[in-house]
Image 1 (cartoon, chains in turn purple, cyan):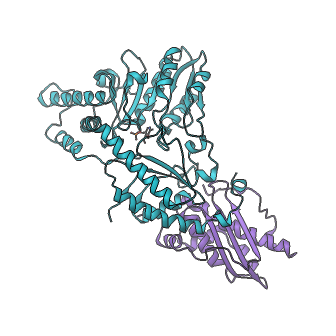
Image 2: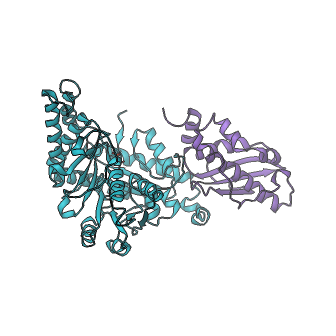
Image 3: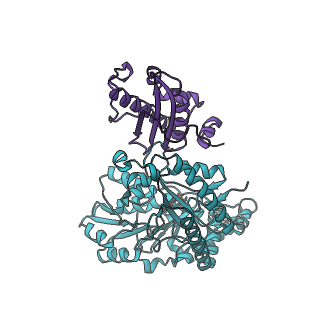
Length: 144
Length: 396
Ligand SMILES: Cc1ncc(COP(=O)(O)O)c(C=O)c1O
């Protein structure tokens, strides 16, 4: 029954890490021009490690569930590790999303990259995972 | 948990009287209406009774009703049949941007055959301006098609005015009456329509049966070829049980029309009042006066419609969004977009349609759920009041 599995529904109905961190030092927002979804992620970074994360998302069930799972997954990761996370990691962690909904998880990947990009810029860091990343670029939805 | 159904514009349950009328035609009275023996004649009679029941609901003559497989086929037939039969007179069709896909996609198909289609805008309230229809007419115009009532926002279009304009200019006028049927007092003569599409499953009849009203004397090409059913205009052995059910549903709709309209409108207005008093930052899409009695289309600002829908579904509440990003196209509602609504408001819109089996208690439960869900989702939203980002800029 339903279009989502139990784990997705769990993250959708009880999203983890909702809100904006008061002591955040890296905030990234990303809006999908395709389906109108928008995500804000706030990170607390200490010694190159993400120690806390919170999110706010305007989006459908899979956008909310993948945002929730993404905040769980970035915690404890170094910036380099976090930059390696792709939307597929979030989809896998959720136990899969319906095909037409995969694109909604791209939001989380892009929001995390945007937050780290801004943090790296402010702190003069040169992170290899950010080469060629442009937070304002349009991204392709080739999952369609 | 019994679901609370607030999606009567999508489809309706079949009423018991309708089902009872249909049952014998599956088993004992199953004869082919074209057969020349007793149970064949009986089937033929049943179809003719249904034809007169549908005709009576819209002020038509019996012979002006042609049964089809539903609203979609009626729309296809009206537009394709009219266009092809008049291609020597011209190649221009006028319609609107808010039509159902049954109409819009048919027009797109005709464009490939060389027809030129003008898709008219609507105003902020979702209503077509008859003056724009008039201005769009060229010496090539052969058909005007404007829906009676819109399926998403429920707005009633100025059909009689457009009908008069069509008549003045000698242009055929079709209207998709699927949503208006049984919800609006329709008289095809005073409406000035030459053709009108109808569907049974929106008026407590079965799915897969509908009709096209074609005013007597109006000639359009057939689109189905085969046997000589429906006065040689729509081939195929008749959907006997469907037709009987449609006829019964039409009879009931006609008999109860005024009560139905009042009851459903009162419920809809009660629902809106309750929502307005308990949830801030909402607004209504489309004109509230010139509107189907049971339709409510609301913007819940800062909340995404599909997430809202999913939370409602968990609580057994059925509503609808034209902007679900679950479809392969990810396309936002073409109707709300045509009204000029900014994208994030399109994505925050939800349609509720009440009907004959809706109760006040149902609506109270839905309001309570909405209060809870909307506040939860607003907490989650980056567009929340205390935390609003430049949504329009980013979403474009
Ligand atoms: C305005 C309108 N036109 C046409 C249709 C299609 O009718 P049917 O479902 O009978 O094919 C619908 C219903 O989905 C409708 O709302």
